[in-house]
Length: 151
Image 1 (tube, rainbow, N blue to C red):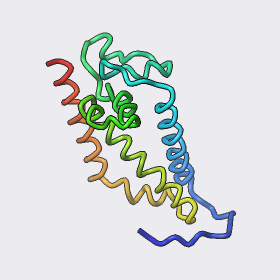
Image 2 (cartoon, rainbow, N blue to C red):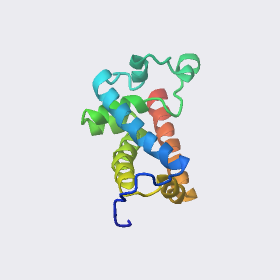
Image 3 (cartoon, rainbow, N blue to C red):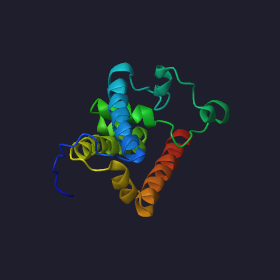
Image 4 (tube, one colour):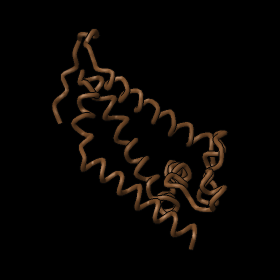
């Protein structure tokens, strides 16, 4: 990681990607705070998002099978309560989401304050192996969720 030399020039031009990355960090922080205060993890292992006024999962409602994201909100809520084992058993990808957010938020804040262009940093990070690993983690978590739901 490069050192931080805060710039005194507030007029530093940053890319649109920078502001999107910073906005994503702020949204993650607000989202985690909202989930920690507004919802209780659903005992069924999915459906917690409905407490936020969102519609039920169509896949579960009409087909009786979970979608790839089923249980992620519940798992995130459990993680934010410190119930890590239950979060993992509910939907492992929820832990990935919280870990990513827990890393992203300070990374973006420090990068912004140090004058880096977060858009350029994200472009370097968003390499095929990382994206494939995230896709594999989501797929494996979905297969696990299908197994525990349909077993």
